[in-house]
Image (cartoon, rainbow, N blue to C red; front, side, top):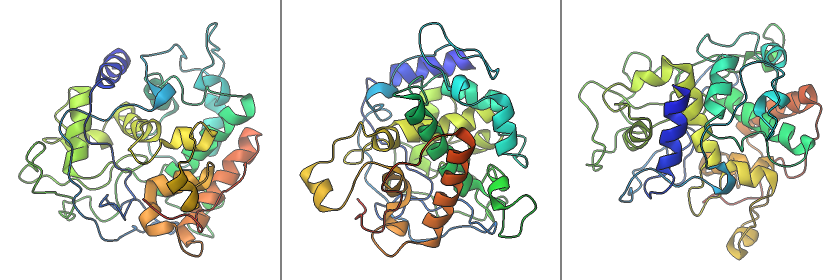
Length: 322
């Protein structure tokens, strides 16, 4: 699986096409998915953006490339390049997610991340840890099964749900863009949020299925039955620019230079910008939303566990969405 994913992702980066939508976006017609801090489901209007021709979206900057060695152990430092396993050990991952669904294993994350060797390996040790904390913080919010008085605290319940709450029995048919003829919705299938950052909509399942050589339009439940596929969908979104949006990777690490329009809209590098990329239409550009507070709480929890700093601009209240 690792070699196939790495090779297919590397090949896909030379083509243009529809970008992966984060599962909790809103203003630009992307889907709204994921669970709230009480185990519920976020909801909101979703439109139908016009997909561009071609294959999947280009990867962002340094996120391209094939597999890197990283192994699945907590040590395993590469002799040629930093790896995610150097930042996030098996033991630390287990302590972060004591209630994680069996789908979300450490080995699955490490294997998926090998297709994106820049994830958790760019910049200073502090910056590398910060990126891992930001990715896991957002993913934990999207999948949380916690509540304020949950055993171990709400932060102990990230990576709990594998799909959008309430959609398990095919009830969520709204994530179908019937006008998209390249990736048409299949009879009896729904394209609600699945995975750590809630892959949603038929055109995203279709585009990502092409990357992996898998029929995700025909079998979208592959995202909830294979942990490597699940984490790869989330990392593809995290590492891939969706112009005019930068990738969350570049925005978090300060590798993205805001345009004049971005500056006028209050968009700045940092954790808040990752929220804007994922769900700016519903959560940003207004007094801090409870969902943003939940993301920040998870982020700070992982920042502390990883022994790094949180950086600046954690909120997105002053940022306009795209």
